[in-house]
Image (cartoon, rainbow over all chains, first blue to last red; front, side, top):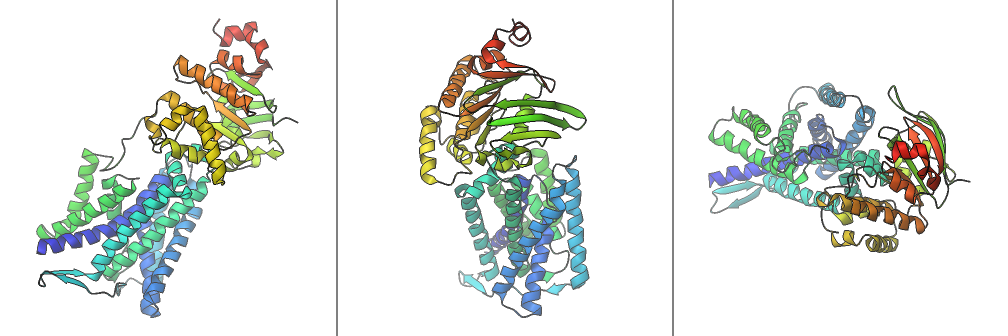
Length: 294
Length: 236
């Protein structure tokens, strides 16, 4: 039974990675950039919830909604002032370095406002969970909620992309910006929408992450952000189902290697997997073959 | 007044002058061909008309709108559609999804349905393959899809960039006869072609481009029998 518990915990952690990875992969697929500040959007969302719920003793639901709104605005604003001017720059490195700069900026801004001490985050999920099979299998409420939320998000995103005009426009922009423009699609607006969705997802991921691992610091988002990037690459960057699969696989591997191998080595194992994937199948599990243009 | 009136259009790619102040016009209902060798600037002209490239200088009047100051994504709703070089269909989308993208700026469901039927009638093969991913179509079918996609926007003028490129002779003939049909239905056509003979055969007028400048213009039939044109572009 204990293996099953670890597996479910892995699924839960993997679900969080998956939600973060969705943001990474959508922005990469559509805006063709890696937003390395994405992990820090999570941290910002957590501080918003912390401030509203713990400091101002406000309602949890209000806290989550506020985090989603603020992260969305943060994502859209960052894109507008930091990334858009560099679109079409001579080197794609320019925007990548800028994203790293935004990441440091947000971390240090949080350090300035909230200080370096680790805050204790109270879970947004108040439900204790369930006990199955004569008490040997306990699943925490936050674990179940996390898995459920990630499933809902995946379904909603797939419906949005395949059933709505805006979603189809995103696919068109992802594939060919010039051709999308010829169709009358506003590429800038589509990219803004992508950042809005990705950043809103970061806020949701943040709420779930800090509920499961209740310590909050300015660097809370950094490591999960990088791991979600690994998950996105593992699943095939640019692919939405790929981000989901990559996240789940990564979460399960991390929890199982923490349990059965060594908790010190688990991060090494996770990044080792990235190296292996890049060597064996550089396009990831669901990634497309990169076609040479004829 | 001309439907499309281009004056002193200049486009630079860095230090390279791709278009050196060219002027031309297209009247309503015409087929106008732009012919010339690779690198003469034909595609650059179409890209500039569609707002994908902004010119260094010049004026593009379309109806009463100055296209130089119109963002690219707003141009299709003014009635100008563009079938780009190399088709550029959305390979990961189905044929039907591509056609829906063509109608992106149109918001009338009934109109969409009737336009779709019109496009299917013109290109029966697209209806047969409507649920197939566009990337799996043959080159000729992709060209049809790119043309059908452009027609979905109800254009007054279609810019066609190298529609015959890479196609078998049978497809080339089919594509050119469809261009003539589309034109007969009242759509003005600005056609860019390396296959000068084919282009001049269906066009009313033509402009000959050489390294960013227009070196000759005239009635297509006259250009077709012009000695220097025959030598330089028709391989005779």
